[in-house]
Structure formats: structure tokens, C-alpha cells
Image (cartoon, rainbow, N blue to C red):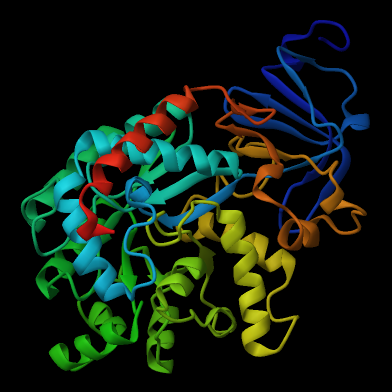
Length: 449
């Protein structure tokens, strides 16, 4: 289907029309009856259709009056842990990790199982409108393999701990592998890199210092689970005479771009340090609630000037990978905790789930809003359903009414990877069947469950 005369400068690979465009730019610009024109991987036009009536496109999608907006950005997960979804439920973090997850990982985490688990988690994320996720796990080349096949964007990071992991026998080998990943993927269209330390209680000061140094050398974010539980805070203070946050600051971990996950137990001094070093914080609301780990003081951190994003954590502790649900719960939780319905607005919650994460990881020049010149990562939401009606405010409806299945199409890097609820890039059933079979094998080891 074409409109108007042939003009090579007016020809696009993909047009998305007849939608309500939410750009999420600094002015919150909206375009009812909006039009998106994509050439290659970039947004070439974002605006009203009536202002760009003549164009040619190889493919035109009718959004049918639905919302067109940027894809969600999952700020932290362990994608392959979908193979352990449902193991060790109703336990605190320490017991969950040491008695259930770590023994299961020692037996079942392999390159092929990381590929399978990452594929299944990424499928779930695409269905919920997520276009990029930040991973911290092992065998990260297998995560990239799954994402390349699917067409979803990923920031990979090989998890580093003091003790051997399923992929690397020592922290030094993990650091070497990070440099290998950097050289392998530095110009990849879908892949970027981070350098994750697991936590202050599983990484020695020497390892934490080395991670910080390498992250600065490669100019990639250093990331870490921080102040997740009250137990961690007590143990670190007993061992080092200072909080986890002060320890990392003193070791130089925060001197480059850095991101901290959870951050549930912070003193005023800790918050001042995070603000001083411009550390991005990613709150993990559902996982924290399920493990009883605590509540990240999001409003207090925001008021101090710290940039807050949202992540899901892995499917073993969440137990799903739908960032929409974490965003919705984050907004509600803090209203309830502070007896203040204004403390996090719908727009603030959406920013946390998309643009804030892009800023935290240094990707906001190309992701996070729908603006000409940025990468074409967007979703189409079907609003022609009872729970959307009447639609007075699209932002409020996204945060308080939207359901995961409302995402009808997901486009990443200008490529349609899900259309009308159908994944186009892989055989979804095949991977669901494979992970189900793996689950049956794991169930034969009841000590993990």
C-alpha cells in the first residue's frame, strides 16, 4: 500500500498509522491520529498523520486507534533463571540463595540451559512490551544468541563472585571474559555491555576494586546488588566497619558510571554518597516483596536527586519478567507506604520504567522516547477493551488499568518482532516445550524445590 507519487526520499521501510502516539519526550508531546515513519532502524518521522499525508512505505501497520509508545526498559534481571521459576518460594533471600538456588545452579546452569532460559524470559518480556533488558548472569554469549534470534535488545554482563561460577572458575577469569565480550560486541546493533559484581558480601574488596577499574577502562557501567537485606548491612558493617555503600565508595567502585540494584536499607550517609557519585538506582519491587527483603526508599532517593529506574529481577524471585507489573506495583506501594497518593505519579512511574533506565545506562541518546533520529523501539497497545474504557488519561490508564496482554505488537531496531500477539522471529511453542521438559528433570531433585 502506497500513498502519493514515488519519491525515494519519501519512501520508508515501515509506517505505523492511526494510533495515539505518546512520545514521552521532555514536553510529554502527544499525537492523536499519529504517524510513525521508520527507515532502517531509525525513527524518521513522529507526528500527526495530517501533517505528513504523502509517503510510501514497504509495510504499513494500522494501530487501530491504540497507543503507540516506547518499549519498556527492564533495568535488571537474570533472564536465564526462568529455568528455576518456582524453586524455593516463601523463603528469605539468604536461605533461598544458599539452600536452593546456588545448589540448583551448580547442577543445571550450562551454556545450553542459559540459552533456553534467556529465550523464554525474553519471549515473556516481548509480550509485555519490553524492548531491552539488562542481564546479570553466566554464559552471556548464550544470552546474546537468544536475543539475536528474537530481535530484542540486551545489555549483557557476566556475573562475578569470589567463588567459581558455572562459567568461570575465578573472578580474574570473569574479568577476562568481560573483556572478550567487550571486543566481541562493541559494535553490535542490539548488544551493549555492563560489568556486574554480584554483591559486597560475595565479592572481596580486591575484586570490587578490580571491577570498578575495568568498568572505567572499558567505559561500561559497573553494576551491583546493594543493601538488599538488613542482614547484608549488618554483616558488612561487622566485617569492614562501614556500610556496603561506604565500602564501595571507598574502593572507587562508583567513580565511573555505576548502577545499584535494590537499595532497600540505606542510611542518610549512604544516600548522600549515591547522590555524590551519581549512582543510578534500579528498584526491584516485586522481588523485594516476595523475598521480604525490604522497600527501596524511592521518594526519598528521588528527592535527593538520584535517578531511579525499575527492574524485574529474575523469574526465580519475581516470578515473572513483565516490567509493566513492577511499574504498576511500584507506584501503588509507595502511595500506600507514605499515605500519599501524589508521591509517585503515573508519569513518574512510566519515566522510571523507560527513560530513566535509558539515562542510568547512558543510552538515552538513542532510546527512551519517540523522537526523530532515535532508534525505532516501540510497542502498540490495544486499548479497545473494557478495562481501558473510558480513556480519559493514557498515562494513568497505563499505570493503573493496563494488562500485560494488551501489547499487540513490539518493534525493536525497526524490526517487527511481535505483531497481533504473534512472535514472528522464533517458534515460541518449541521453547515453551523445551523448558517444560527441563523443569520435569529438575523436579526429580526435590531438595531444590
